[in-house]
Amino acid sequence: MVAARRNGRPVDDDGAMLDHLSIQVADFERAATFYDAVLDTIGGKRIMEFPGVVGYGTGFPCFWIGTEATHGDVRQECHIAFTAPSRAAVDAFRDAAAGLGYEVLHEPRLWPEYHAGYYGTFVRDPDGNNVEAVHHTFDA
Image (cartoon, rainbow, N blue to C red; front, side, top):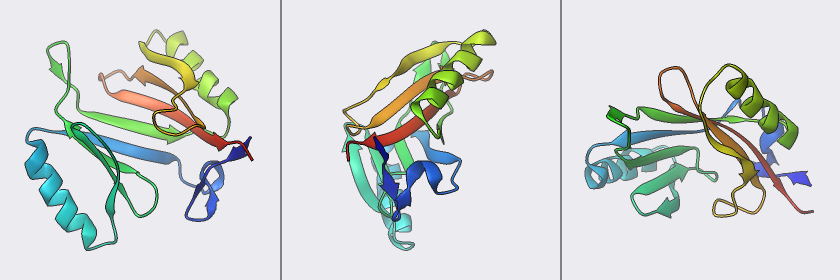
């Protein structure tokens, strides 16, 4: 496996600790219109879309907006994804969170709906945020 690339460099070796960030918005269409306009001025564009979700970037979808989500009666404030240097590091991230007693939302696995080499896990932080560790690979 070889690391996926962002801006010509491997994603897990580009110095970026944050892989992507997602916020939930109350009025999706209004927010999408806003971000389409303001991000266009700095070279940002829609890169990936799912129903009620848009990923923006300049070549890699690193900023996402989505319809407002809840966890029980609590509004889910944000989603933060950290870049992991390997799949083993993704597994260790999950184990560390679970070892501290935090909820594992999704066990480590491949997420082919994002791309073939997307390996990630999702956990809740102490404030209920959805926190992810992800490693990007593809077959050479």
